[in-house]
Length: 469
Image 1 (cartoon, rainbow, N blue to C red):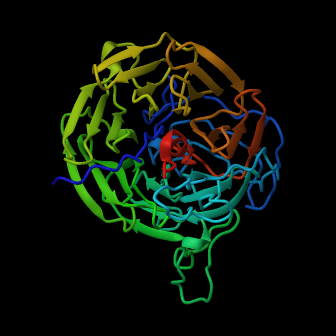
Image 2: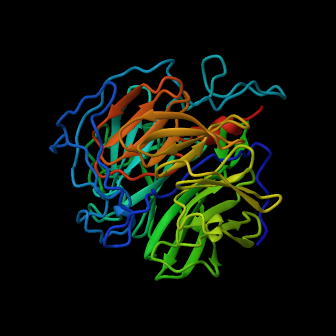
């Protein structure tokens, strides 16, 4: 089936969806760093609003990649519930999504107030894997402003990867099957539960499945493993000042070696097309992480030793599979995965590997020293690649040399917000890092968080998501 290629306004999603890294393993074959979160740096507020303790430790950073992991019964690798209500930090500048632009053709400016587009918000979405919920964190105030159940079965799903569309809404994939979309603000929510007004969570307590009205849709999947998730850009409608025809990629595995990539309608949650992916390595995870390129094509990385790189064309669903850099014997697994603004695909572990889609060649760095989990590129051409580790680190994307090494509580997933701050998510904490000074502001109210992706959507917006008019 041929589909019209996305309009020129589409951009490259500098996103990351992936696991964590450390050569050690636990009894279930998951990664085990043996690391614990240290004292939170910067301004914190431990709080008690979720009824849990304020501790923040994790003994198995990849425990969530196996729901039966012995680290705890919930498969998140975090034995503490954590708690907190944020620190009230106002943050610099009040970042906002400005989806408008100076129009041409005599059309009125999008949005209100001097032509600035709407919505104006900046949220980070973190999956509370062990709780079966997703948290909405205001990146300016570093507070939680909503929490939502991801599946009808309370606490189910073991959610992990989140992805934010250009229209600002979020989708979350559950490891044990299912994808759910939530609206970013109440303006989009519909009154459907029979109670006057919009009922939705406004803090760190989730409403019941039937009461919550800011859930756009939920689509069940029967996979044994469902991890990757990435929005493809839609088309910008200048007349309506809205993104349209947004589509969403996901992938799943049956058993040990039957993989599928799925393209979904972002508005309805309906499956548009499904394609089988032949020949991937055998393991219980399948495709581990995903991102999209400037045309909205799917790129995914397998987790197994000798892992593969997969590309699916959004127009034709044509599949191409390459051997991953681990076939060189340099490392047994690659955990982080992202696509940068220059079009390169990255795999991250104790080294980083860069794939050139034109030459179809890999370039692999020297050992970086220690394990690396999530990775995400900033929006500048030839800029930095940020890595989750015992803190957050950055490397020059050209030389692959270390640039920053900021100490933070242990991080797995890494994202960048609309003001340019780096975020590290892990266990019970989401930590905002100033990329220039390393100053950290933390929110410690998450529950078994394990999120790898463009958790804010800023990466997609920053590299061209704002329409040119």
